[in-house]
Every structure is written in C-alpha cells, then in structure tokens.
Length: 236
Image (cartoon, rainbow, N blue to C red):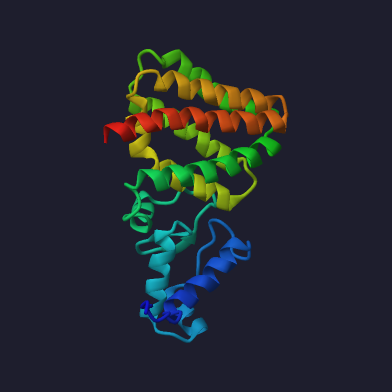
C-alpha cells in the first residue's frame, strides 16, 4: 500500500498573497503604486499585522513588490527581474540536475522564441542584432562568463518582447538555472562560435518573418546545444 501525505489547507498568509498578487497582475494596483500600510491591510483583511507582514515579505521574495524600510511597500514594474535568491530557493534541489534543466530549457526557450518571433518589430531586430554584433567582434578576446552575459541578454530580451509576462519570468528563471551548465559548455572547444552562429541563424529567420524557418532554426539550435551538452555529461 502506497503512502500519501495529507493535503495542506491554504493558509491565511497565502490567501492574502493571492489577493494582493491578483490585484497587481490584473492592473488594479499599478507599478510604482504604494500599498496601504500593514495596519490598514490588517483591518481590510481582518487579520493580524503579523499575517500581513508575512504575505508582504513573500510577495517581495517573488519580485512583485519592494519593501522600503520606513517608507512602505511599492508595486514593482513588471519587468523587474526575479531575485536570484528566489530562484535558488524554488529550485534548490533541482538546479544541479542537468537533464531536467536541459529539458526545461528546451521547452521554455522554444515557446519564448516562437512568441517573440511573431511579435518582434524592426526596432527589436536591431537591438538583438547589436547584441550579436558586439559578441562577434569580441569573440576572440572575451572570457566565457562575459560572453554568456551577452547570450543571456539576448534571451532575456526575447522574453521581454514575447508579449507574455509569464514567459518573461520563465526565461529569467531558465537563464539563471542554466548558468552553471552553460559556462561549462562554453569551455568546450567550438562552443562559443557555435552558440553565436545558432542565435544569428535564429535572428535571421525572425527578420525574414518566416515562422517555419524560425521553428527549424530553434530545432537546429537545440540539436547543436545537445551535442556540446553530451560532451560535458560524458566528462562528469
């Protein structure tokens, strides 16, 4: 007979979090707006100030609000990145599972790339091209960590222009989760050149507004990435 754990009931703190988060994500509370103070919120929710304080700290942890000492709590811009500590906390037991990280990368990055490709403007194309041009010019002198920063900027921007705020947050998460593995990949001979070529191919297909070609370039990107990925796995 298998064993199961009892399902936990949603806590008061979680209910407060859900309501405030819902008001923020729906736009009823706008970026930059200050939330009522703890006392007022406690009265509105008919709970203790301690419960409100816990909920606000949790919302701060996931990047929805910023708590400023002596001033109060303020709604973040939607593009404010998730704190690294938040991602580490959420995925602390999975972050070193290379197979799972790679599978998540392929799933999330593919959807973000496709969505961004369908919405990207000429200005977006130019910005992405500048990132790749800068990396290509510095390719022979740049260190892997700095090169990876450039690739991360490319992908984070793709998340920003995907038209989906959840996709943007997921891309932020993936960029951090893949960081350690990507650095190892870029130390494999030929990996830097290959990663740049693959994103160049992707951008060209986006500029051509050919979604079939975009899909093919994404598949080629991950086939190529898997080849270098298998190299570091075999050495682990």
